[in-house]
Length: 605
Image (cartoon, rainbow, N blue to C red; front, top):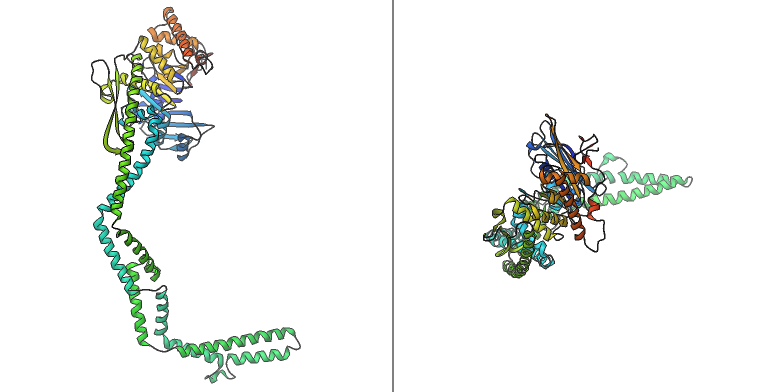
């Protein structure tokens, strides 16, 4: 993660490796800004006041290794971004005027996309970040994750059945609630269909009637045109044509060509073609004569045609979706209306829907009862395991109750509501976590749950911000041990004030604040073994005397010995001590360019 101009941090890069990473530093050095940066990268609400004084904007960038076929990669691609060599690049820019921009996979995206991705990437647990644990829905999901396959099989079947039940119920309510409207719609459809049936339009009838109407209305014009054409072709009745009509002249041309055709094959071919023209002219004149004889003025028929056309036009205006479709549109409407009327007149539909709805509800309630029983059994087991963890986390008398309340309302997760209740000490009445636990208690409860749930409800990265508040001594060691255990399956980042917790780190980062009197900025050091001893000694007493250093060295030896002891026997991997050791420290940030060591830390660039 790269942070620039956020709070007291001018420019810093944080190498957040696998396993357990601890972040330490003096009060006010900027450790909280690291968590703030993570929150910004995960789409949290931005506060312009977090921009470093004098700078125009703050920038947080992160490089996350995610599965290429997982939901995070899929959502990033939906937003227009893509992975870079198996890693997803996220960025958030916060300007001093309050505006905020986000980039996902190299492309600009709404800040809300970061929030969607965070559901699959990161869980922050701290003094003010316990919403995940306070939410009733999340508490239910925590219990289901712990129960595992005992719940998930029935829950999958329940949710599929629940979706069908809601759909049928909604359809039933719609049909029942609109019965009067359906009756009115059915009456209108019947009236329309009766009208169509009465008129009885035939396919393409409107086109045929339009043509007949034009012919009857212009019979004299048509007759005159036919007579003129016939006379022009035959010459009959028109002395102005002289030597006959077109047929006579074409026949004369044919004879002349035929006589000379004996001497030239070209003229012979033309004579044949002239003969063909003569035949066509004869046929044409015959047809024109027949057409002229068929033309009769019939005012009565014309009136009948116009009345029929008026009837069809009325139908088209009233029922065709597009008047340009004419009678075809009316016939299409009539077919659809008949089908819709059958649906509206189905008196048994409402009863059938009610029967299906009731049957689905019976099956749902049976599944919900099975879910309730499975959850209550899992709740007892979860209570016992969390109690063991809380006892080791300086809450020996604390008792977590997982209350499963079965209700009549069937929601998408069943009929249950789950409530986590905490009795912080003996004699105290259990109270909801949202009202009965302090921030430190919530953090430890969250840690206990995460340790118990490790692997059941995996989140790739967990961040604990001062989860050890108000704890010391042996309880602090137990917190460190459990964080280290959790880090076997999940990347864990911890901001801590306790040396006992920091001693378990795979990677130890410290935030160092320098003040030259005018500019305050923070850098990040990645500590080697010598640097870790110095930092742990400072955390133990605020000084780096020989006694504190000896104590710090003992803490490191002890934590590494316990870590090696806790390693799974079937996993002959490199000991935790070797994984945590570094050969030289690295100052992360542009302000670290000088070399040298101070108090056991090197600032080698």
